[in-house]
Image 1 (cartoon, rainbow, N blue to C red):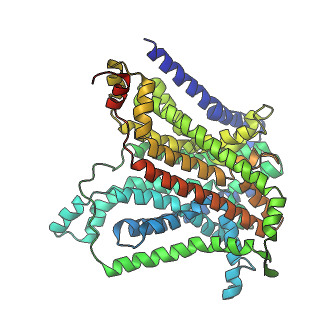
Image 2: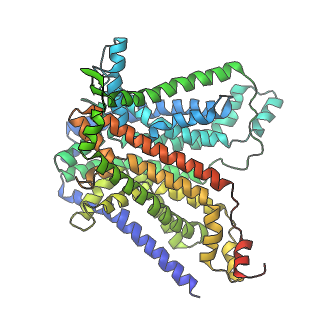
Length: 541
């Protein structure tokens, strides 16, 4: 009799947490609009130009990103490309450094005094519309690659084999089988990548020049001018594409094409196909590695481009300006977000995936709503809601902001994992006198440990490199390492900014590699069973 009320009370506590951490801050931002002349802001020529630039950049970059991602996903899943695991790691490297670093890398390569500009004698400027598009593609295509390759990896080969037997051409197979199968996943990928680009201010801040976008405008007005009213208006506008993407994701998530794979694809020998895949992979790998290589060169030269003598002074200068302290802040924030985020995600997913009722449905909706909130918007809402409280100005508010910013994806990982486990575990346990806690400890946790490792990695990596939500919340004492990049760039200390970018990349690579090893170790161990729990209780199954 006690389990029902206790379960409901715990769900209510979780709902209150999401109310305070997400809903009320957003409501406070919207209330702030009552004191703002919204019409004057949205009819201003500068706002209209920024909105137009944002839409054009986002559409162009999203289409190019998805085209590149589709080619790479096809190369990894449908060809005999050698070293597929290595290529996949290379294709996802841009996800391990802040977006602003990609813009800086392009400036170092193709700016007026860029390495390749001087080497190849290139005329023209990388700054402006196409510079933002190029940087946004570099920043966003790995997300599309992961989404599309995951869908292709689990596609059933049986329909294609039947079509071959019937003599149906490859073009008709593509139109009749591949397109229907990929339609909903591609729609989700398009909106995901589009939202990622339109809400990013790192790339356009670094390389935009006179081509200003809405996120940059919001950043300048809030951080530079402390105009929270205008920031709230822009934040509301940026919520629109994110909300559309959120709705599309809800409509397609449970109706996807994932099903039982009868047969995986047999990759026949095809020299031209495999060569094309290798060429495409090499070109994209160069596209990814060149900016990172420029960071390495820039870190160890005295002053680019005037003095190219090798030195370690840039590292010393960065640490002299508290890079070590801010690195420690970042690691503390990232570890805290990962540990607390994994715990909260698991608890919430247990309630939503393993129990029913209106509270569970409401909790599930609250858990995924952060998918529709850009980091800049969440950060501004936290400023308006928590300012004047003990939380404001502390590391704790950065932990909370990052956890809620990145909460939805890890939550959905564990939600799907727990939902696939036998739904009768708790009922069987109750019959045998085994409590819920024992079921969770001895069955659900062991069975979901690989997912928990993935969740920890996701939380940590994104918290290390984000600059969006924390831009409005960090101060000189709590600043994470990633925010040193725009500071160094503003003072033309590109060498130190390059070192910081490399430092973030190395930390994230080390964490990802360590978690990869841990997953292999955990994968070799068998998970818990109900029988094991019952045996511990001394019962007879």
